[in-house]
Length: 164
Image (cartoon, rainbow, N blue to C red; front, side, top):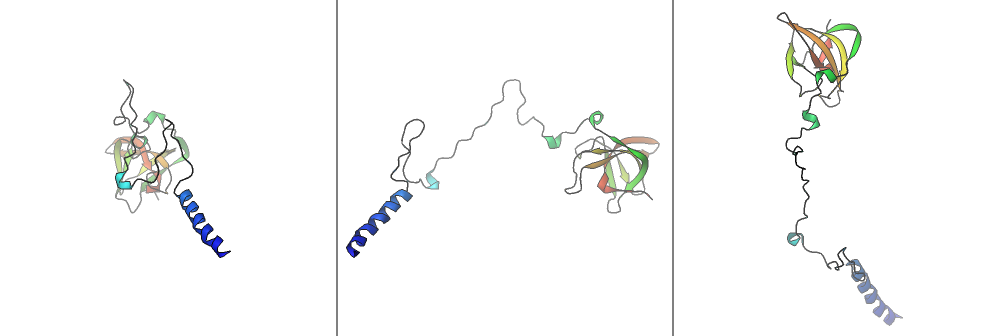
């Protein structure tokens, strides 16, 4: 019995080694050629070719295509929900000033700013960009009067507080 084990054990180990290394089954590529055996060291492997999409004539190139983060919605396309009762807001204590923007986005045109001591009247609410992670996407549409000029724009709601 021990002679039988002495012969079978190395045979079984050899068969397991051959199967583990991919031997025993020959794979064929789509073009009909056999797959190479063994593993090429990483230092000798050729890089995987990348495919770069080519733009058709007349289409914008990827470099000139604006990203969603850098594109502001035009002011006339912003859905504003009027507030039932207009109220005044001022800059939160931790901020010295807050930009009033054309649309509810940090990439929108800056129309003015609310500084400490200034108040703006909230006319409506709009959903826009979440300017600070975890603080939501609520913006207020406000009227801000400075130097006799009234500016209508948007401020990020979490950064203002209702005036007393």
